[in-house]
Image (cartoon, one colour):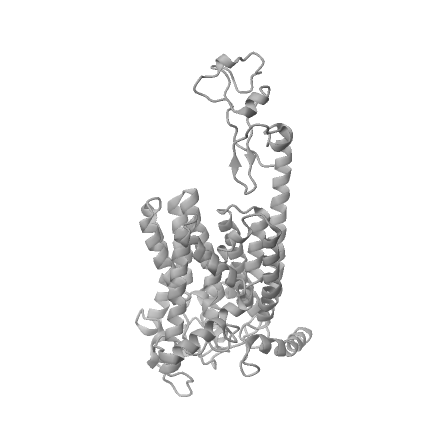
Length: 514
């Protein structure tokens, strides 16, 4: 049982709390100090007691409280509490080790599409050829590229690739090379970037839930739900910006809550700004979150003095991506939203296919929005747990609960991000398992599942279990290949099921012939 603060550990004036109470009389107690019924019933007890209510909150002991209902602070209970704490820590470590194993086993070590192909091209160009141009690489034929100044470059923001290059550099020097087919280098780069931050993001998510009233077991269940019951798992199987941004948002949110609830404002806000900046410099629309939370910090009297640390860290995080963009194009405007850079012979892109270069309207906007959310690749369909999390998020700020401010910021910025893609895109993110653009929001949404497990009742576990029974298979099937092929089947889940045997045979052949 957990130790509680005693009501009173003081003895008579000049007497140590450890001194025997036998010689004390009621006259030694100041008249202004009320005597609790628990003390009156057991005057020989050396320390006070507190009892926990059903929801985990501490309540004062009342009349008739027996020793069996109280939390003692004696040496025997202290020994038991330490043992329980050690056991709990080992259980947490066991769960995260299990998640680490799942993560290591759910990587697709092969370029599966243009998106990860162009990122591998930049990584290989930086490490092996010391250039940003992807022409001399094994992935030069990918179509996710721009043509500037007579050279081809990746059209993606550079933050994930710079991280990947830092991992690939020692791997390359060990003789392990990137290649278009199944290869160990791709696996290791993804393992020590995307998967590592996937796991760290789950640790941060678990840490964020510590600021709720949930006990250790309930926090672990929600962490597992996020880790293997959402598209966070599916998109961590390949090298991409969406999974990294989701992990960085989860870590940034944890540091933000630490700044607000545990003090040490400057270091916590610095780290929050740093990870929010990494997320935004990997996925531009995600910058809505650090911008809104920057205003949140500024308006909170407890956090306001740390605004400068938050902003400085944010700028530090985005600087490398901006520097690469400037080196390529001579501008800070992301190359991926400049149509003329995609105008080269054989380019599959034109202005109407580029996200951010047009605005949808009319009946198409309605159909497209419906398809993005609840269609055959709809994000809510592929993340059933969000159907629980979103109403609870709205409830959080409507009822002005403890995390009302955070819930309002996340809800409004989620509307902004979803609205942007519904208005400015028209291809559902290409060949992808559901809507990859929205994956970044999942850790923030899932945080608001905590009220589901906050109270008593078996029905809460039944509901969570029922949703997990549907969500986990969807997420695992997505991890087979997040870049689902629409030419196989327009429904991503069915496409992955149909492609699974071929992928397994291909991988096995690569392993046995290596």
